[in-house]
Length: 133
Image 1 (tube, rainbow, N blue to C red):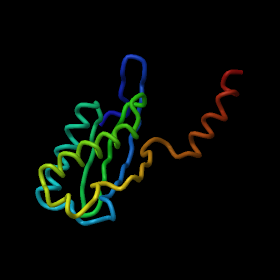
Image 2 (image 1 turned 45 degrees about the vertical axis):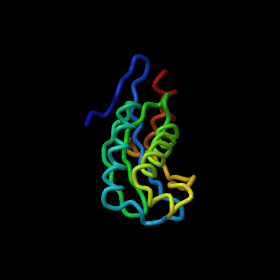
Image 3 (image 1 turned 90 degrees about the vertical axis):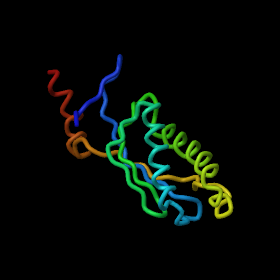
């Protein structure tokens, strides 16, 4: 895994741990639903040029470790995943409609990962002025 990605104007390393759950934390991510959800997430990632580093589902939540271009934004990626997967999974697995009014809860967890500890970055920034002298 390379430490940085590049585009025309940006060099970046924006890795995120994302967690989201079905509405009411219902245990519906089982068997073929889980398999199809992972396929949909990968399709969205490929379209949005997001790198999936790791992905796993439990019956009532999803974990994704990914790298997202800073100009696209992690919130747009989560929104795209939830929107498309809700529509497709509810079409392909009609029993989900009877169990849930909507597939996903509105909330999600996201945390940046990787890089140096915050204290090291703060110290690096504080020391920048003294290097210019």
